Length: 326
Image (cartoon, rainbow, N blue to C red; front, side, top):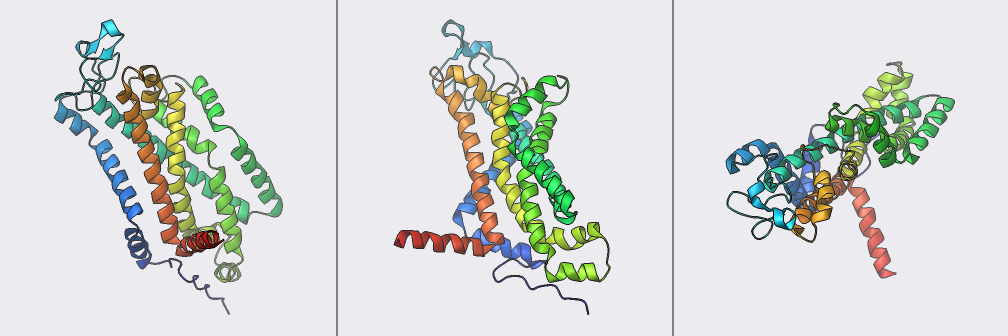
């Protein structure tokens, strides 16, 4: 007789149509998650509407305005607060006079696109490698595990700098950053998926699928394991987005990421380091946006993890209470 699928653990989100609504209800109960989601939604909306907002302000991110900078002072914007005016809502870029508001909007498009694309690549590769390590033989699992450890130990920024130096300059830099970050940072996802798949492999519903002869390892992975792995994979992907944003900003800050005139927050920070004393707003604006984005993704990722597995949040609260009593 075929074995039945094990019942989900108490408190965990069961698979099915109601799972999404249950997770959404739990997220709405957390003000921090709602605030983080609102910040991210606003940033994404502004990034998508960058061309429309640039048209509304009558500015272009790559147009120079030499009359708005003081050449006698080395290119410092004229006027107060970095040249803020009715035409330039956040001032202008020192040295060039380019509109800072539109450059920040277009920079958000690049930074978010690179981060989300890189996380998608590393999630796909990590899930595939992790399942192969869990479902393969003992020798194959060990080899894949050692290879994964090597990938985790590799210094991503150093290799990224080396790769960007040898790639032809006409290759699209945002796509190159997506591939570099995604293909060098999948080790953590693979290790997590392998551990989860090994734990699921011995459960009743997997044994039932194997004994019933319903298919080989690929079919078991697709029909039985992947649905159960969806929650931890989504949670881990949400947590990895801030890492990808920082990696893109770091590569652009080092001058090997997005090339001018295409703006990105990391590139703006790289050029802003020489203007910190003369025009602090040019440093604080991209740094503040980068900080807010990373913080919002971190808070939302933690909230998604707790919503998908409320027992984790309960364990954290119990541990905190014990520490306070001690």
